[in-house]
Length: 51
Image (cartoon, rainbow, N blue to C red; front, side, top):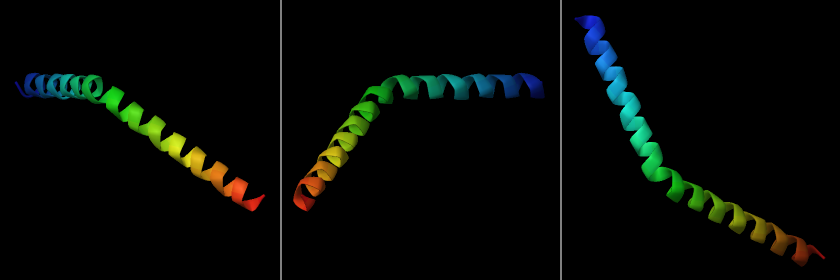
């Protein structure tokens, strides 16, 4: 009985993680792209100031 409960709980955790990944993957990737773009732009501005 203990093994069955353990298996069921692992399946529940796995399915919850899969659903969270599917829901939040796109917004997180968009935020990462935006942060990278902002960092790149700031670095380019600093280089222009130095020249």
